[in-house]
Length: 90
Picture 1 (tube, rainbow, N blue to C red):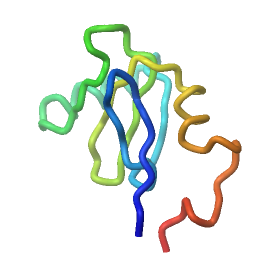
Picture 2 (picture 1 turned 30 degrees about the vertical axis):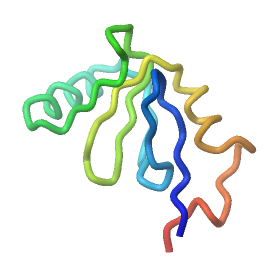
Picture 3 (picture 1 turned 90 degrees about the vertical axis):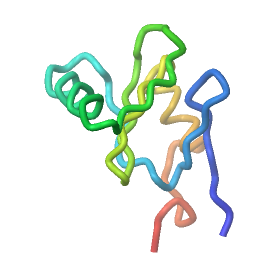
Picture 4 (picture 1 turned 180 degrees about the horizontal axis):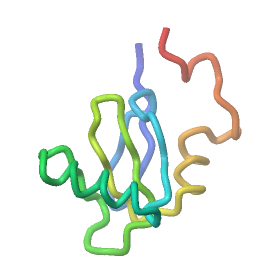
């Protein structure tokens, strides 16, 4: 089984099948999620010091911060704009 990856910026990649959600970072619940992940050691900062524009949550409960827009990441995750049968874990 090959694992498809996609770029979250600055040479950082995430395995597509592990992504649960891609979220905009502006809401208060997301800020709390980020702070809690930082305290528990589950936060991965892939922004290289730039403004956080999207938050990615994985099935291992890790939280990944990216400087790339949420829409751009979702297009990279599924270039056709749809979820295919190969994207689903059986």
